[in-house]
Figure 1 (cartoon, protein in one colour):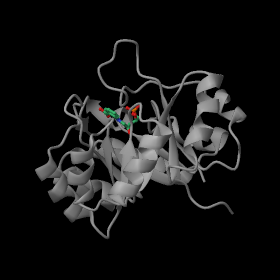
Figure 2: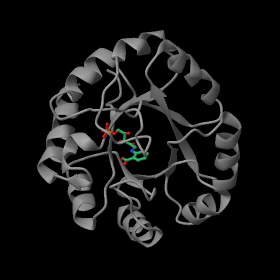
Figure 3: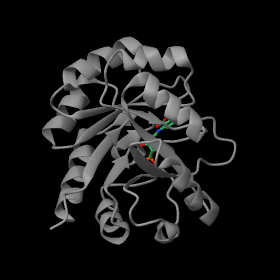
Length: 215
Ligand SMILES: O=C(O)c1ccccc1NCC(=O)[C@H](O)[C@H](O)COP(=O)(O)O
């Protein structure tokens, strides 16, 4: 039987929600460190959340095109992963991986066959790929909008590339996504919220329960 899919809950801001997510059996949690996100947490909050999670669940700090000082500040907190969610080039991803000494999850926005072809250039410089929906036109942040994309586009992806799926997943759609796309894991933010940045414990539990039941 295939390994169970990795379930990542992204955009956690509070110790209570982190505790509930661990108790519900998620594999990874994401913390946003990007000022324009409604899920932004400060470096001090990050330090507390990462230390609360250490050894209990994998932690991932989401950054958007970070400069070297931001990378160093986050790397000093020793998360398990840094997620790069901006327009970072493959060379920049490689440099950040070397400098931070942390596993890299590279997010790639997908809206066309060309975007899918773009994934290959990141495979050797990142430890894992996250495919996500493209943000709406004019959006002031590159992720966490709750929009989906055409999963059929992923059929063109080299099947040897391990990737996680995100973009508009919800407790109601996660099982179908796992069955039809067959990703290494799934990632959700808006779909377990009642308003941007406001996570709901019951939705988080339902998302994880439905993801587990799908397999
Ligand atoms: O969530 C944000 O506000 C955000 C801002 C800037 C870059 C990335 C962001 N989120 C990244 C994620 O990992 C989300 O989980 C992913 O985009 C899926 O989001 P959603 O469609 O809301 O589930």
